[in-house]
Amino acid sequence: MPMSADPEVQRLLAMPEEAYMNDEQLAFFQHRLAAEQAEVEAHLVEVRNAIADNERSGDELDRAAVEEELRLLLRQADRETRLLRKIRQALRRIEEGDYGYCAETGQPIGLPRLLLRPTAELCLEAKERQEKREHHYSKQRGDA
Image (cartoon, rainbow, N blue to C red; front, side, top):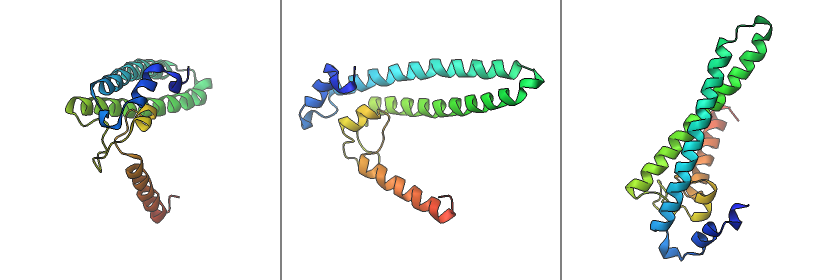
């Protein structure tokens, strides 16, 4: 079922602007983030086990294939570890009462953006400014 067809999401989106980050919305995102946290933690255990299994495999003929698979697993573990950190930070922002508000401007991030990326810390405008600064910096360094 697409997210937009979810009746709970529809109810949240139908709430008036002044209800932004009320108890129901915070509980929704807390539940969603906790579920995503459990999913990422479980997958990270699987990835770490796969890495450990690969390191024990000593067949020299398959070493190149094993090293490539290991490299991919390590990248995946790194990506998921960063995601897990962002999820935990978002859950902390819920506890502290800062969730849903831009860390740079203090303005609401907005439900549609949070539904797509529940770990978002910046409103769309601040995120676009950040990306332009990063792009400009990388162009100056010659990375682009």
